[in-house]
Image 1 (cartoon, rainbow, N blue to C red):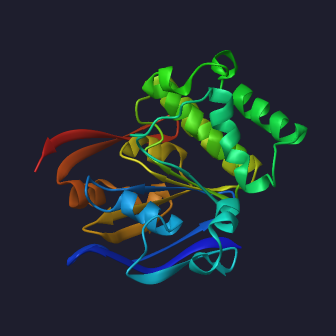
Image 2: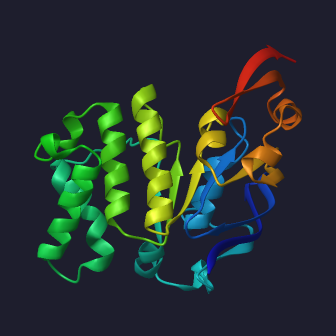
Length: 255
């Protein structure tokens, strides 16, 4: 079973943002969506989640059309970590993470819910701030708390919009390593919209490269993340360097 996006299109008014997107995400995979600003990465995630309603096409999860199931049922299959939080959470870090258990709670959280929250806080290194107000945290800490909230939701699929935003280099690597680990150990399908091509190349099982609201190519990073494709999508000349088995791209000049 998998998350499948078929012929998905979306437009704001007469402006077409997404054009016939097709992709598949299997459990246990980490899939990165890359492309320049304005190409439709965030819009794609929101259409998959039905935050935005696609103009055409459909999304199925575990064989079910997401448009035909309740929002509560969708929340048992799909979790979301947005890029930014213009709103405030007037509550503690612990309670903010506990919100992720809502799809599984009938009335009040039980001891099992509490244990799951504590375990995720430990995994994310957030125990020391668990009783702090969410609003008082740094941008990077907030990002980790919202990721913890999504993980404790225990969904089949996790969608993240720029999860390394506001994080320093060390924490970027830690977050991507954690996502890859969760994908493999917990059999979660993870879709990440990301700008950093090197992180995408290093940690992804599959990469979708977008240009002009369409999928230019998709496949394993070693096959689709080429200097030619990057030049076509971003309009920059890059050099490829391989170190310890990992490929990295170094910008050379804008075209």
